[in-house]
Length: 101
Image (cartoon, rainbow, N blue to C red; front, side, top):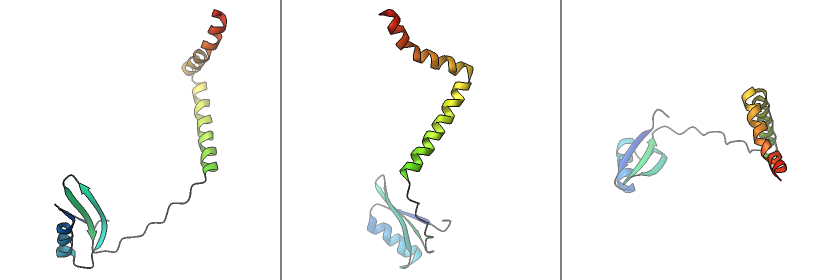
């Protein structure tokens, strides 16, 4: 948010005092984090906007999508002349072992 302010102090109580002095007792605390040897509080006078929760992920759909993307990628690789040669060389060692034996 554009109206968020960051307050930094050596400890949490001092940082909270700074928030209350600047924004008053009705300030909204957005985030509290440790930064090095300091406590950093992000606060605002404005009420934070609630975000929509992320939709639950369907593992089957995610896996199917990943497989389709991988298949498309593999097809593109096979279409490229240099990559087709590399793929054939990658598959060659099993043939070489058969010949050497």
